[in-house]
Amino acid sequence: MVWRHPLRRSEHTPSACGARSLRRRARWRALAWMLAAGSVGGCVSSIPAATPPPSATPPALPSGNPVPTRSADPSVAATPVAPAAGTPGLPVASPSPGFSLRVPILTYHVIAPWAVARAYALPALAVDPALFDAQLAALRAADWRTITTRELANALASGREVAPRTFVITIDDGHADGATYALPVLRKYGDVATFYVVAGRIGNPHNLTWAQVAELAAEGMEIGNHTLGHQVLSRLPGAEVRTQVDSAQALLTSALGSAPTTFAYPFGAFDAGVESIVRQAGFSMAVTTEAGSRERWDRRLEAPRIEVGASFSPAEVLAKMTPSG
Ligand SMILES: [Zn+2]
Image (cartoon, rainbow, N blue to C red):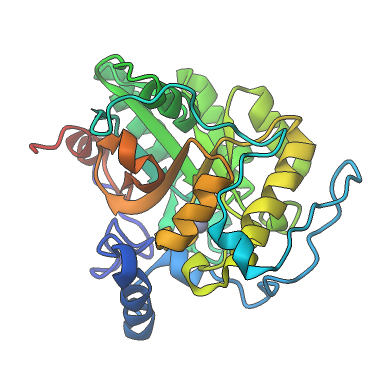
């Protein structure tokens, strides 16, 4: 069966969330070029017109706890700080810097029928639930099994190999379909996924509610930090990057009762300063939009992923899982 997406365009490549060529200092330059060229699909075009400024007051915490604030003193940015109580701790053990695992991390954004996804800001990235089902069926038939990013990070931190044909499913941006369409399919195959949610959007139209986020967590899914407002972090001053990371962490920790331990850079955009802030926040792994399927311990905050295009056939997904290199 050939799957065709209503919005599939020749320029809409599987790397539409952008930035597969973005590296370090060139990241933002390349992103700006793609924006100007109009060649970037959903993830970039998903920047909502109503995106609150970075200094906007986060929405009220579900439990009413205050969102902690940080000093805007720029000197703070250069001072390594130990993770505060309640934030994810850095791994205790440190394997050799070059230790690596080859665990494909798949990237999805929307699992929803076209009739639903068309109302979203990024419908071009929507994978139909029936296709998602077929992809997971094919992966299961080929003996692929899921773990979460958190479990992968734990294995990497302990220098522990994982079973062959282990992979990770990530679903970015926290759209409502994560609970309404993706979860039933994941449940059907006994799979787990890591949902990178935008904390400041939870409860907004077309986004997960706090109850749905809690439901996903209760079902064994990992809830990861995808910042407060989905800003391009490499464009922001360090203090605002901290606000984006820490405010989201406070909201999610309050709602879930435990702190997220892994992070996804919005648009895959980061630089050394952003990565340093993510490291200081204590995350054990951070995922990017770099293409690849091998995670290195010394680059655990730059983990590559495999973007699943809107109309990838199950065979195409399987082919991505076993690269020749
Ligand atoms: Zn995103």
